[in-house]
Length: 545
Image (cartoon, rainbow, N blue to C red; front, side, top):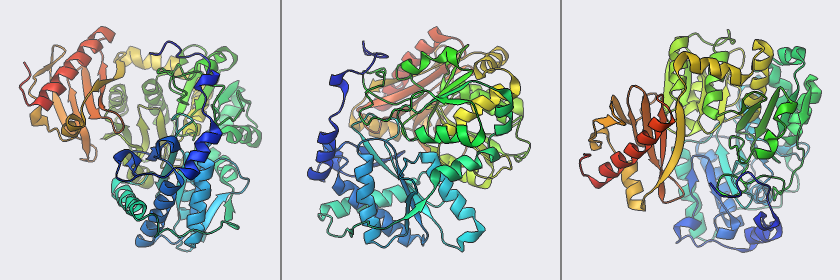
């Protein structure tokens, strides 16, 4: 924890916006250097222009690759495009539009020149592709955002016709083609002046449709005091529109937009990071906790949520997911009786216990929201959530709302829960803890070389030789997700009351250890220590003593 975590940003913490944008246009990557190539992680290609990892060359090549990919797939309808408030997002959108127009793609930008949250773009794709008026013209989209990452970063993500994040088959092809274009000096990229492009009212369509997924009337009747802090992100005008359109008592706590994020408090490591689930990043928001019945935060592209209550402060994402699941599956009669609860394997086991109490099937998948997409599309998974404060769920009638994470939706749900039950989400979690136990959860990092990270990603259950974890018998070892059989890219080890999962970082020389214990925080520390020993032994090939 940095000594300045939770304190206000100072001038020395802020980016030079002009330098960042100048680097975007005038610095060129060397594709022989791995860090300067196109790489799609779980949420698209990310990097900074200052590091030659997110420059005009990259975005032109990626967009050209997307054009060629959609042609291969027979996607001939409009491509919806939007961006968040990061400084690199606007120039990246201009580059992308030049390539899309140069390739004669029917592209739609925001009608009012507004920023576009990730869930609004997903909503637009789904709405178009389910409309009877589309006449077979399938659409897809691009959202330009590095999510909650620092102001110096840029991000670029492709969402195919299902509306959610592209799967690894698509992103692998796109990245390979983009790097081939870069290697050839982008001579295969077509560009033209984007003088005239089509428009779409992302905000209006999303806001007007909310009563089909949230009980807006219940919130209105309850007369709650609701605060929403966009954290300088793309949801800022959406919250104002939701308040006006649906006559809700919502106060936009901080309507400021600044690509430097000078108004933020520093995250745990001393960086500016717009993470609404971080107490340090949300420190200034938490000062207002007593002013509202429900207070929420979103990150820069509004795909994450932070829930603040006057009685409980900032809720752990795992705690809120468990409360949301219990509430939704008892207040959505239009959902299929066999619809499952989706979670990633690194989310809390409290969700497992809630699912059992509801008599619902639990559908566990690897890290990455893309795994929930098929179930959300066909209604077989009614809720999908990640421990990193990202989730979405179905409409009242059981059809798809968004197939990408929706922080606005989860924030509004907190007000619905408070309005309908008369209790805060924090109070409801206390009831769950009394019923099922109160687990301690934490993620830590451990050092690993690139070779060790690669070995960890290939681990099989037979590579783990330990029989106990923190004094308890090991009951399960997984390297594939039970929900869909997809590889975890690591390993998960469980006992009756605790578990840990280890997976390599995609950007740093560390591996991540997620751990949870229903025996308290001191026991959690033992789980974490044993986890590191077990993984180190597996990587070295030596039996665990």
